[in-house]
Image 1 (cartoon, rainbow, N blue to C red):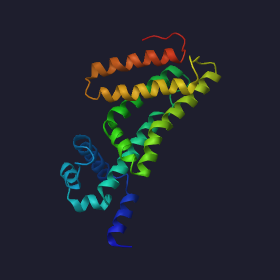
Image 2: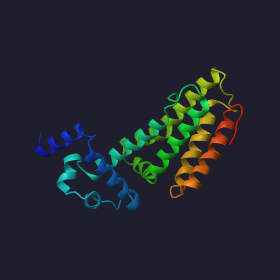
Image 3: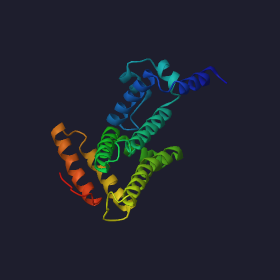
Image 4: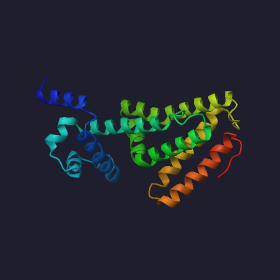
Length: 207
């Protein structure tokens, strides 16, 4: 194994370091601003304020950086769909999940579209794109079904349909409000709460 290969392997083992996160943050900003084709390793290192040699300790190429970003986006959406962490109150769990999912979509921004586009020619990214789109919805649908079986809610349609309606609309709405101020953002989320609680048939629905 070459020395550069050893460096990349060691970098993967240190993937939770501050420097690794800083490089991914810088890469996300550059990809978002320039798009995939116009992004270069030089632009990423300039944004991060590091030498190329430093970046290559952690990533072997632009493609590998983007793949790591796609994994981070996937993980962010999955983390947003972790119901059951707020006790037994389904309304609190729903609202916390909506908040987290909206922030994940807003923060991912144009990276979501890039992941889809690159997935056409990159099977690994295609798999991640499918996970980003499907796994959170499946988790949400399972949570709705559990709540329905517990008679805590009375959804207006099958859990999968309700999960898709809320999840897909929320992802798009959050993306379109990436530049909204705090007041507009909070107002949007309150509207989503009301719609979601109505679709889920929660008693005593209130804005």
